[in-house]
Image (tube, rainbow, N blue to C red; front, side, top):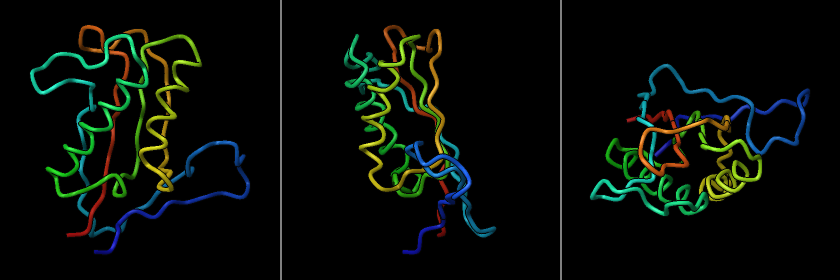
Length: 135
């Protein structure tokens, strides 16, 4: 099945970033807008309380599930935002590394940001995403 997402790199921008700076999809692609993937267990409880890596792992797992239900996978992501409830850069990096490793070489354009609080009790990580597929 052909992929809809094309990652765009720039020789004029720093190569320090661990992601492509842009991505495109053809006009015939079906866009999938996902709610933020939260680190929630099936019963609604928050997974891995106090653990940034554990919550990032659960958020990625839930993201995979939502994508699959929409007929897509991680390789179909076109843009993401990783939200981390912390003012410590090392906490953001911990969550980012889990997310980055899950995506492998599909280094989709992403934003990593620290926020003051997220929506569920004990929640530390959330991943927002948009995907594109050709049916």
